[in-house]
Image (cartoon, rainbow, N blue to C red; front, top):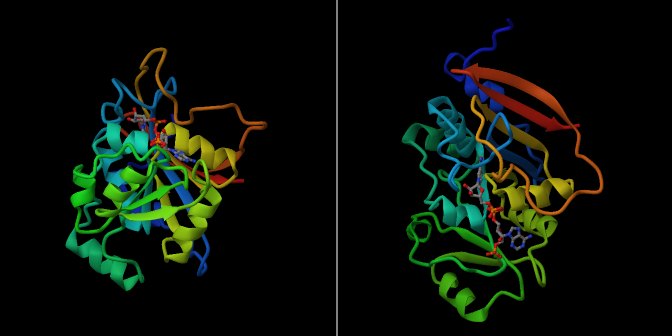
Length: 241
Ligand SMILES: NC(=O)c1ccc[n+]([C@@H]2O[C@H](COP(=O)([O-])OP(=O)(O)OC[C@H]3O[C@@H](n4cnc5c(N)ncnc54)[C@H](OP(=O)(O)O)[C@@H]3O)[C@@H](O)[C@H]2O)c1
């Protein structure tokens, strides 16, 4: 049997380091964990799928990103909070020209987000990417606790949203899901990279996958970047072909 190194035994930065992004450029990386049979959640959350090595990779990808992009469904289901960056990584980020802590950007058309949720009491003000049709009262309430960015009429135009993020110096985008947002990004050919943890379990039928929503006209092909392994979990990095 072929053995792959564990995330514990390698320089994870070397494995997951991002290519330099040109000024105004964008690199969109997504990070998901899935069961062997493709489930992206168990009982509505992803936490039951990943182990300690998955959490290590999850944290590192956050520390490398300029911004963490997430759909409203995931922000609510997973009770999103601010990104936590330890002091030594903050220094590294500053040296690399990044803010010490990446903000979280939530994509929502309905703005059914609680302004008192812990995400909105973060030191780093989150962004909310929304559309012109969003309810005015919810927009006003959230504007008190987040930077509101309108990118589209009825729904958020994701290409525009990425362009706006890049314009704010947030070109290295880490998308943490969920399936609806992920499918929209990948289906629109806006995804550069997928980091996927394959957890050694079968979750059974009727679970959300890492993409959800409508069928695409054609599949998106990717090429393998690396494989790491720990405790039967595979850590796969795929790049857009
Ligand atoms: N396995 C994993 O790694 C992983 C990762 C993330 C999430 N998950 C799981 O996925 C589930 C949540 O899935 P989900 O599909 O509901 O989540 P989602 O993609 O995070 O959120 C969907 C919501 O995002 C907003 N949205 C997305 N694209 C938009 C656009 N173009 N314009 C406007 N709004 C947009 C909409 O919010 P509004 O309704 O507010 O308009 C939409 O209802 C949870 O069970 C979570 O645990 C798993």
